[in-house]
Image (cartoon, rainbow, N blue to C red):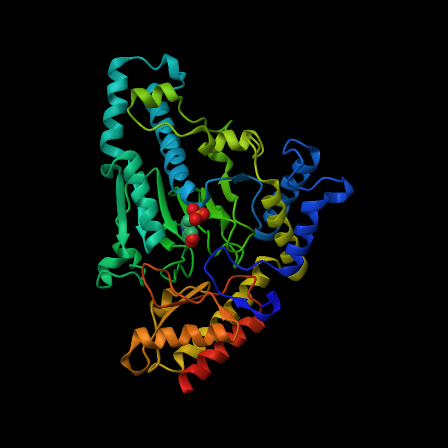
Length: 426
Ligand code: PLP
C-alpha cells in the first residue's frame, strides 16, 4: 500500500505529515542549496543554530511559553528525562538546603563537619520526590528515581491502581493525595500513553499561590504536547519526546523555568554530591550544561530539530489561535471515536473512567459475544484491511488502542468511528 491508503493509529513513533516528510527528505540531499544535506552540516554551523533558534521561537509562540522559561533540545528520550528530572531537581533541592545551612559558601569551602552533618541529616530525613502514579509511564519514572536515590526518597502521592482493582484507569481524587512538605518536585504524567488516562486539567492542589510560590511541578507531556493549551507558568519543567506530536524520534524537549538555571541556581558540585553520597548526573543530563550551550554541548541531531520545526510551522500556519485551535480539533476527533464506542456498550468497553480518558490514546476492549480475544483479533484484521492500522493495544495491557495524535486528520477519525460502528453492527 502507499501512504495515502493508510491511516496509522500507532502510539509512537507516530504518523508525520506527508508534506513535512517531503520537505525533510529533500533537505537530506541538499539543504538550502548548499550542496550538503542537513544531516551532514556541522551542528556548530550558523545554519544549525538558526534551525534550533527558529524551532525554539515557534514552540514558544505556539504554546505561549513565557520569557522566563528556556527550551532545551536533548537526547535520551522520555526515559532519559525520568533520570534527568530526578537528578536536576534533587540538585536544586540540595543547593537550596545547602544555602540555608551554610549560607553563600562555595562548594569547596563547605567543610565544617557539624554543618555538613546537619545537611546530611536534612537529606536523610527530608529529601522527597513526589510521584503521582496514574499509569505505566509515571510508574517507570518513579521506579527510576527510586533506583537512583533509594526508595526512601520517593513518595508515592497517589497510586491509581489502589482505587481500581490493581489496574490503571482512574485518577485518585486530589483530597486523597499525600504531598510531601517540601518536595524536590511533584511529578506526574499528563497523558499515560499505554493506559489511555489523561489529566483533564492542571491539578487544583498544585496551582501556585497568588504570590507565585507553590510546589515544584514537573510533567511528562510526551504523548499530548501540542494538542492543547498548557498553563506553562504552573510548571518548573515539562518534557516530551518528539516522536508523537512533535516530530521524528531522536530529540527530547525540556521547557524549564529559568529559576532552576544559572545565574539563579547552580547545581551542587560533583565533590559535594560525592560527600553527601548522592548520585552525580551524567553531564549530558544536566539542564544547566545544555542551557548554557543552547542545546549544543555535544552533537545534536539537527535533522530531528528541523523536522520538529517544520511540524511547528505547519501548526502555526494551520491554527491562527495556535494550541487552542488544535485543542478544538483534538477534542472533536476524540468525541467522534468515543461517541461511536459508547453507542455500542454491548460490543465495546472503554478502559479508563470517562472523566480521565485520553484524547490522544483511546483504549478499549472489544467484548462482542463474550469472546474478547476472538473479537479483538477480528477487529484488528478487518480494520487493517480497510487501511486503519496500528490499533493493537500495548503488549502489557492488550486490547485496542487508537492513538489520535495531531497528524491524524479529521477524516481519519471519521473513518475509524465509522468502522467502529460497522463492526458493531456486523
Ligand atoms: N513518557 C511517555 C508518556 C511515553 O509515551 C513514552 C514512550 O512512549 C515515554 C515516556 C518514553 O519515551 P522514550 O521511548 O522516548 O524513552
